[in-house]
Amino acid sequence: MRICLVYDCLFPHTVGGAERWYRNLGERLAREGHEVTYLTLRQWERGADPGVRGVDVRAVGSQMVLYVEGRGRVLPPLVFGVGVLWHLLWHGRRYDAVHTASFPYFSLLAAGLLRPMWRYRLVVDWHEVWTRAYWRGYLGAAGGRIGYAVQRAGVRLRQRAFCFSRLHGQRLVEEGLRGAPTVLRGEYAGSLEGADAVAADDVVVFAGRHIPEKRAPAAVGGIAAARERLPGLRGVVFGDGPERERVLAEIAARGAGDAITAPGFVAAEEVDEALRCALCLLAPSEREGYGLVVVEASARGTPSVVVAGPDNAMVELVEQGVNGFVAPSAEPADLAEAIVRVHEEGLALRERTAAWFREHVHELSLEGSLERVVASYAADSARA
Image (cartoon, rainbow, N blue to C red; front, top):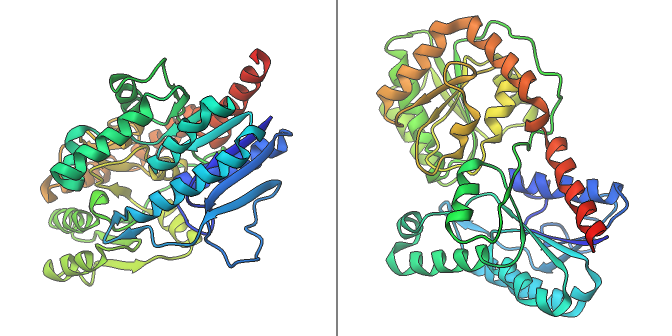
């Protein structure tokens, strides 16, 4: 089949779960013998090889800053949407399928607009589906209405839909998706063997972008509160972003500079080693479409502490008392209580975490999800 993948970022030029997903999907489809084109914004020097084996990568827009102060800019999605529309207007007849991320929505709407003309199959990955209330809180009353309406228009296009959590699968149905989405549970690309449980250091690790919804400053508060009951506890807050100054200010305000560090972005190997030895991963996010870092921690036998919330699909990856704990809120006392419970459970919790990963490894693996997506292409081709 001739397949067009559509996403505005490309790994490793930008780093994130969706970027990894589309790069791996493109390379896997190419190995299966499909002809794959990848449309994106330029993130590499003009004339350089973007470096995706077997995939024809085409920039349909120039390199742009995507986020300002943790929020997405409006211009890049518009530019990308116009670029996708222009490319498909001229080349859409070449493709048997256009496989796109739901967000940014303008590129999805462009692909949906031209689908009846060229009659390609539209395949959409829905990493998240926001509620009307969340849109309003994110963009204000007027902007939220527009954002929600655009998302809803995308949901109602004729498509084969994939998503990565039960939460967002249910929301797709509620928003008017035709048919049932396929829920994929796996984005983990590491070793499938898992690690043996070992005794941990008294270190709590946060690893993620410092943007409002990930609540990195709350991680500092939780670790500092837990230290009142576990005096030897330390913390490491990996990552960077618009909330980094708030993280540093929170460390200073709590007088925790000797116990909690925030080294910024570091090599993946350093994060890996820290997770392997950590008492737990602390992920106080308000909103997550999946939660890959929980799986990465579990693969190392390290339990996780996450926070309950209506927009947090990460909780689907934590079984209470098996591979971690779900705190009722991101308040310091609630996070501290969960951290202390992890400490009290000790090696037994780490053994259960390692066993949980081995039990679910195939469904949690990127390979397992890729198998299901590739199989869907084969089924569609057979029916054509």
